[in-house]
Length: 87
Image (cartoon, rainbow, N blue to C red):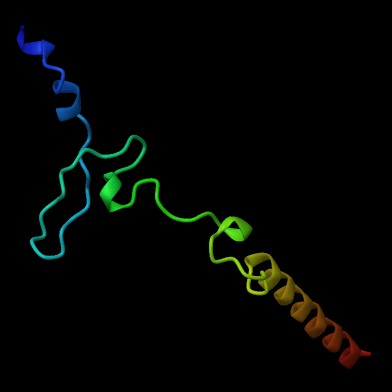
């Protein structure tokens, strides 16, 4: 077996995780997930979907869309009162 035939050479040459330990301040150095800068233990590909697909979704009364709609309605109300004052 030649020096370049080692099956672990590809794994060892993979990009390394950039996460740092709070206790030791050293890098993790585990293999990073493809397309991410961190390994699977430090959050690569993690997180929940947004909106109704999120496991804790209840009713949507505080969803981004509804909050933006409330801001728009409030802005329109302020503009309407300003126009009434000018008349």
